[in-house]
Image 1 (cartoon, rainbow, N blue to C red):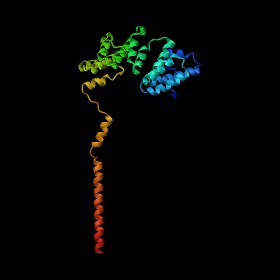
Image 2 (cartoon, helix red, strand yellow; image 1 turned 60 degrees about the vertical axis):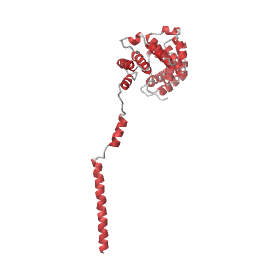
Image 3 (cartoon, rainbow, N blue to C red; image 1 turned 45 degrees about the vertical axis):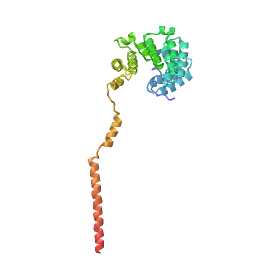
Image 4 (tube, helix red, strand yellow; image 1 turned 180 degrees about the vertical axis):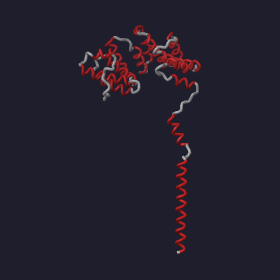
Length: 269
């Protein structure tokens, strides 16, 4: 797959670069450039990111960072079986349990919420940092909703992290999930309150909380392009067009008069 010339491979995280030192330099550079493309495209073009991840995987399948990147690309493309396999491989290579929450979410994606709940009770969860534990809570709440246990999902999200006033990287997503669960339970007033709190914490636009809040407030969004097309269709003809039509009519009348005059002259002859 083509890679832009401005991508050198130096853009990757230094820890990943360190892992690639086990490879010949030329190969390491090729892998690094593909990993950069995975990171660039992951959010906006998951399928493109997936394609570059498969190239990196063919080149260096024994590098944990490559397996992890391939896992996230597959996950973003909703290829949950592949993602889970890659995450498991990366975990075996490193012993790192940071991927545990996303592995559990892959189980949800595969239609196995019960398995995700089993993983939430595993010893690995206690080794997660605060961010990982919040992610695990979000996964558990999602699994409860998958199983139709909406009240349990709401209770799962009611945590000290949710009530905290400080804004952390996970705060917006946690508040959003809670608001969404409340809305699904028909608790619209409370949902509106928590969507508003999610908006306050969402500094990088990681959720569509502002849109959800606007919908609850009855704000309707209009597609500007469609509106412009409708305006053009309904707009009256321009004065220039009217003049052209008038000139055309006068010209037709003049031609008709000339034809009649010629006919009269012919009759006289």
